Image (cartoon, rainbow, N blue to C red; front, side):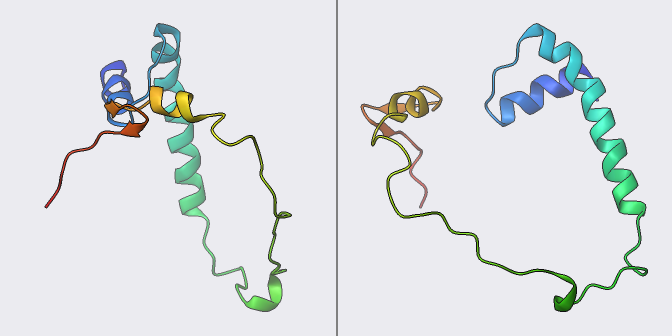
Length: 94
């Protein structure tokens, strides 16, 4: 992956990258892809995948407000490509 591909990917996912990040990310992507390749090579033939081998439990949090209502609204809206007041503006799809 080269710098141009990193910039294209950043544009697709709508994130802003500093010049330093653009320099560093191609090498990091290479490391990530190498790791994914290693994981793909692991076969599950030696592993027994059955419900008995897993501890299944439902993780729930207590009811209640996690944070003050509206505290992140402006931050979230500032990341939108287009907005109309306090709403995201999107293309109409029919």
